[in-house]
Image (cartoon, rainbow, N blue to C red):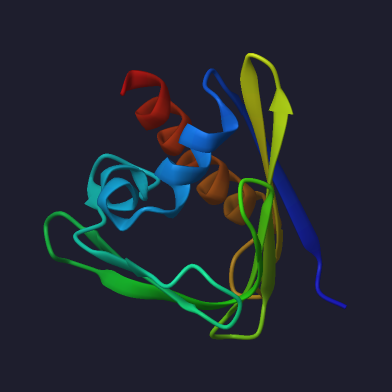
Length: 137
C-alpha cells in the first residue's frame, strides 16, 4: 500500500464557487503552481466519471515542465472528486461546508522519488495558491 498524504485548507467562500474555481480550466491556469517562478499555461478538464484531466506545469524560464494527467474515477458535484494519475497513484479531493467557509481536503498517494515532507509541502503550496486565488476573486 502506498503512503497517503493529506493536506487541507479553509477557504473564505461558498462551496459552489470553490468547486467551480477548482474544476474550471480558465481558473486552474491561474492558481495551479507551487511557486511564483512556475505557471500553468493550459489545462483541460472533462469532469465526469472516466473523464480526463490535464494541466501543463512549467517553470516560467522554460527550464523544466511536465503534464500532470489523470482519469476521474468519481465526480460528485460540489462534494468530492477522486482520480487516478498516470503512474496509478490515487487522489481524493473533498469539499465540505464550514459556513461561511469551505474546507478543502486532498488525500493522495505519495510517489517514491521524493521525500514525503517535500511532496506534502509542494501539494500544500499549490492548495495555498488556490485558496489565495479564490479569496482574491
